[in-house]
Length: 256
Image (cartoon, rainbow, N blue to C red; front, side):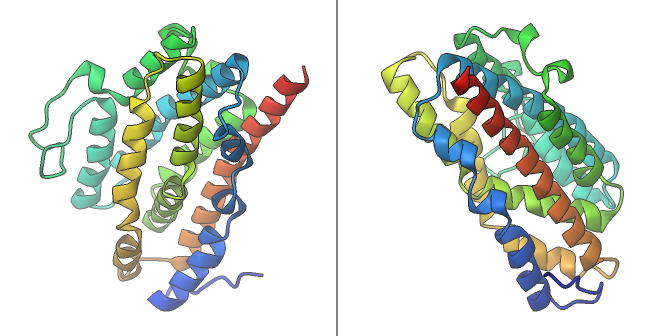
């Protein structure tokens, strides 16, 4: 049982609580769907279903990111949120690691990369990325992002952000890429992997800074550790809902 820390909990206690609540979360420790996907055994139907659901999450994530910008508590966090949003939309990072002075290109938008990937699988732009295509588990994840990640409470938003970064850096991108590389080598040679490899590279750089970010939010006098941890737990539970939904779907397709 995890003891909820008081708002004034010290950094060491907070780190310990984070390890218990976030680091040991089942979806961080083991993702059944991506573990299977890494083997490269997905049928064309399973691959299309995965791509469709991931496209809904990927597209609707921008709504949550915009809300995160709108609800940012200060200018620095507002700009940090815009860095992510504008890069998603197609503004490239400069050598300094910022979109400030970067170049906008339509085709550099992350969703357009995913559209190119989906097209090879027989899915065009009108067939992906829309809320109406999401399964209940996918939409539950997207709605949780709006509620927790885009929250107007700074401690809540920080907890959700930390959880998302921790999950994204836990290796699921590499498992997806492993499976896609096998599919590309064995069946679909023209499959473009740029969307996936870019995000994996990006998350590797983010992973280096998660502990520093935790230390920064913890010293804010308005920081509430309990709200931070509750949001982190809720966000990872929603992540688990998404992946467990995909796992259930792929088992149904395998049995059909």
